[in-house]
Length: 260
Image (cartoon, rainbow, N blue to C red):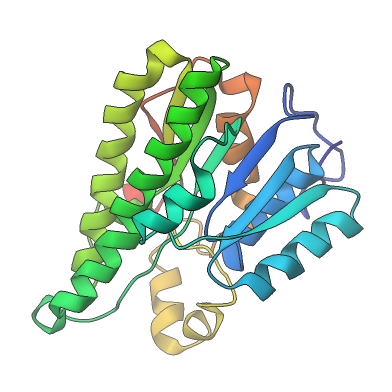
């Protein structure tokens, strides 16, 4: 099966995906839901995981209506017991660590609860999911690929996102460390670092004057769309990326190289 994006009238065949199994966390909406549908459209059997079960079921129904295979999974990545209970012993071929949360506030206004929530979800949660699924991959012996969805804010900072930026920088470094350790198990680990991508959660902000000013700082003078991440994600999970591990792909319209 193939995927057609809004920017491409010709289907692209991604080798080695048909018949694979995948886990996508944080898949009840936004990028997670988009990634789950993208993989389903490419012949992957997708486990769609998040805390909001009804939203997860809706994503599964959409994948099924388009001819794909999907099943819902209730999962709270910030709860190690939830991760172990849901995932232990299940050898997925592909894992997309997408679950994440943030807070826009001065570092002085970050409470201990705020910091713990962000780090527990974005960094520790990804570690728990990666470790649990990699253990199953290693025991099965067929390897696999893990993509940790980080951010350009893991490489360059902005105001009022101290905990988020720290969590994403840690996630990038974690990806490198796990890639080094797990290569002998034929497990690839990479990070995908999006720039500003328009989703239902941020659409109103980017329509505001402040949001429009931020868009003008992106060299391409536009927000990314979820489909702009299709190529990077499919490269990392398909056979075309089989020699890639311990690295990160940035898709940000040139934001990282813009002048300070």
